[in-house]
Image (cartoon, rainbow over all chains, first blue to last red):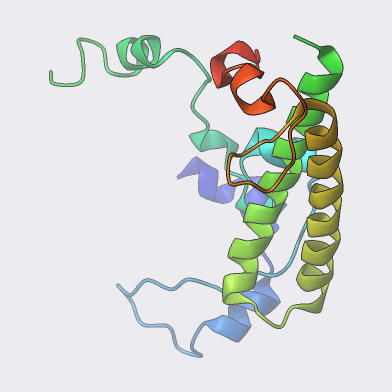
Length: 82
Length: 85
């Protein structure tokens, strides 16, 4: 999980996590921390990145903008139903 | 197609997207004053842009919210795939 150690995840706000997580979080339970308002991106950047919130930007999941057929061909070699 | 028209349309898309983001945020944070202020400001900005576009190029939607010059601007405008956006 190299991504979890990357800078972006380290910039998550511990204070807000502390506010939204129980004092003793249980193992094997999923928690969704409440988002802080961080409107960092101007409208043009937001449209290009798919979010206006820097805390929600996940460039590692960005799919290159290519024709769908070409995307399928490169992403799923041999077609969708291998 | 007219460069200014494309630019205006792109700017409208940017502000529409910003408003989608703000409405989603406000759904879960209805009392966030900064988000509310940004939403109201963005809404005003979008209204101005759409008004300007429709005044120059005709309606953006066909729900009767914008007047049309002659000939009927809705049918004579470019199809979405002709805009190059």
